[in-house]
Each structure stands twice: as structure tokens, then as C-alpha cells.
View 1: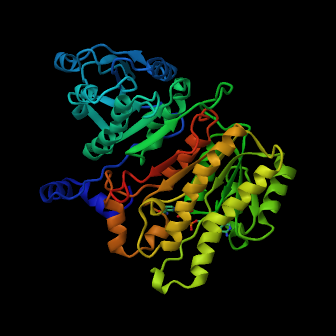
View 2: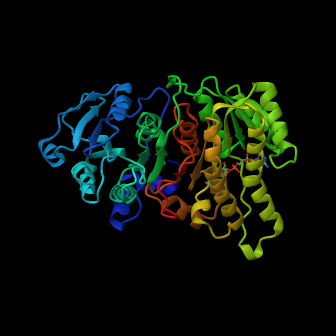
View 3: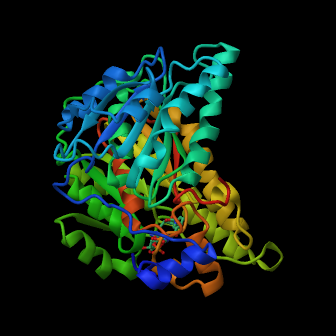
Length: 468
Ligand SMILES: NC(=O)c1ccc[n+]([C@@H]2O[C@H](COP(=O)([O-])OP(=O)(O)OC[C@H]3O[C@@H](n4cnc5c(N)ncnc54)[C@H](O)[C@@H]3O)[C@@H](O)[C@H]2O)c1
């Protein structure tokens, strides 16, 4: 954790002062490293009656080497009643500790407001037993599925529970809701793995929707993108550089794209992992055709397209000249629309099971003073994802967006100290995210077995208090 405040409060004196004064106390978050287990700790799994996801959860835990732990403390067992179906366990050496790295509760069977008490029954005795960087995961159904008002009401209520619980967690803990459509339980795996693992370090308070998707061959967990070609725009630095690196780590051949002025930086980035470069300004009239020609000629197609390139040109609306407006919309939104249109107009260029992942922003959800142009463009990105999801589904592909909050980059390092500190602290984790946190989220959406995720917008913002 780089920022000075975090360093101060993580020494004994600073920590004591921060606690006494009620100041934020960020902790260093667990982050995934190659070769590390899915999750370094025990997982407690529970279910309300009628839960549909037991088999899917068990299969993810078994795949990760879990054993069943029924050695619960008496008071926990008594409090859980019939709610806990089993507890998966890693690191078997501490059977008596009764602390968990993750709590997973299948709430898909909850069909009335009174049954919501099952959430309380499961989490009340266990939430304080979560380890640092712990995971609280609720599995829900789609509110309108089946069309029963009482069940829909109760299922909608799960979002409030998860958001509030996320704000109560300490020491880097996160909380998520994964909504699993009826019949889509078999698609849960990639999302459950992501949210259990430290790859989702800076994602909290989110709802992911897992729908129909389709079957894919077994995925190589070490290199899920092996054999895939991934285009990343704006890859020469910042978040784009991290995305390129993570997709390459996951086995993809990465084609990085950036403007002519950053050609050397781009070649350095993609050269580090044997990727390719396309030098282009994505707003140029001929850019979509040139990009698609290069993907066809040099790679025979593309599997993953990440629209990351973006700019800010901040000014309050009254003082904003037309150039700031036009440029921001052109780069952040229109260029993406044009590239997608060209890509989809060419038969088979986006290969079957193709993925498009767009980088929106918290500003596109909450709005931000001085950023009417940027917020408009980034809200437009969300609109594009929602509108294009059925189009991609017809072609057995998906389109999703990530919406970063405060991420530690050159851009945010250059902000004045007041807004910078406010941006860093005003979230449940009391710190900024790292570019790799955005990249890991994109890698999850791009993974071959994420076929059930389409039209999602996932914030990577540490559960920012703004626009939540
Ligand atoms: N840093 C944050 O906190 C944050 C928060 C929310 C969203 N985002 C979004 O994440 C993305 C990456 O942001 P970043 O912080 O890494 O910014 P950055 O400025 O470091 O990187 C953006 C990249 O896009 C490239 N680019 C810009 N215009 C281009 C064009 N016309 N053609 C081709 N490439 C072009 C730039 O050259 C640069 O390499 C952007 O879409 C940004 O809006 C960032």
C-alpha cells in the first residue's frame, strides 16, 4: 500500500491515534499471486431451505481442494441451526480456530420477507469471525424469476443486506451478491471463484448477474486465456498496461493499442510478454477498419476486446469549450461504438465466445462536478453495454463493463491533495485501488467460463460511498 496516510496508520502509534480519533484505518489488501491457492483460508457454506446452488458451490470448492469441515464451535453450530450445510476447509492445520476467510450463503430459496431472517441466522454468529481480506458472498436469484411478488420482494432485499454488510466489514473484507438465474447454476463457477479469491481485492458491494450462457470446454485454470487473442486499447500505461499484463499472464496473446506519440511505451509494454502492437488514434476516421484489418491479417481474428483508452478534459459546464466536450465523447464513447460496429460487421472476426469489456467509471454512475463531458461519455458506455448485450448473446459472445473508482495511477497522483485524499478514503476499504484490481476484474469477465455474464456493470471502487 503506497500512500503515506496508510503507512502512518499501519504503525502502532499511528494506528492507536487513528483509532482514538475515529479516522479511517486502511489495511493492506490480499492480492492474488501466480501459483497461490484460490483462497488462503477456510470457507463456511450455508443455505436457506430450497437453495439451488449447493452443487455448484460444492463443485468449486472441491475443484480447489476443499474438504468438509463439520467441526464448528458449539455456539456457532447452535446459532446456525440448520442453516450451515457444510464448511469447506483449506489449510487443515488449524481445525479449532473457527475463523473463516469466506462465508458463502445460498439465499436462492428465500421466497418471503420473513425468510430473510435466514441471512441474520447465518451471518450474525459468523461475521465477526471473518479473517482479514475476508469474503462475504450471498447467492440470490433474479427477483422476477419466478414471477412471485413475495419472492421477488425478498430477493430484491438481498442487495440492501449485502451493501450494508460490506460497509460493516473491517480489515479489507468485501461483500457481494451473485444473482444466479434459474437453470444457470452451472455457470456460477467463474464468478464464485473470482469473488472468493484475492483477485477481487478492491471490488465490494456489487451485484453480478449470472444468466444462461453456454457450455465451454474445460478451462485451464493457470492459463484460462491460452490460445486467445486479446486487443487492449490504451495499453501503454496506467490501467491499460495492467490489463495487458494480466491478460498475458492468463495466457492470451495481447495486442496493445495506443496513439503514435506513445509508440515506444506501447512497444516496451507488449514486448515484456511477447505481445503485438497497433499504433492508432481510435478517433481517426479509418481507425476501426485499420484495427480490424490488422486483427484479421496478423491474428486471424480476436477473442477479447478491452475498450480501455480514455481521457478526461475537466471543466465546469459553463466554462467548457466545445473541443473538450467533443474530444472526450469521441474517445471515450463514439470510438468504442465505431470499433464494435466494424468488428461485428466482419463475419467471424470476433470469434465464437468473444468478449467485449468496456472501461466505464464511477463518474458515469454518480456524476462528478467538472466532468459533465466525462460522466456523459462513461454513462454512455454503460448504455452501450446494456443495449449491445442481446446482440452479443445472439453471437454467443458477451459484453460487460467495469466502472473503476479511485485507482492509484499517474492521473490520480496529479490531483490536488484535498480531492485526492477524499477519493482515496471515501470507500469501505478506505484506500485507493490499484490498476491490477481493474485488470483482474476484466480478466474474470473475459474468461472462457464467464459465458453467463452478459450486460453486467461491475464497480471496482472498494464500495465507494459516492454513487453507491
Ligand atoms: N485512474 C482512475 O482512477 C480511473 C477511474 C475511472 C475510470 N478510469 C478509466 O480507465 C481508463 C484508463 O485510465 P488511466 O487512468 O489508465 O488513464 P491513462 O491516461 O494513464 O491511460 C489512458 C490511455 O489511453 C490512451 N488513449 C487516449 N486517447 C486515445 C486515442 N484517441 N487513441 C488511442 N489511445 C488513446 C492514452 O494514450 C493512454 O495510454 C480510462 O478509460 C479512464 O477513463 C480511470
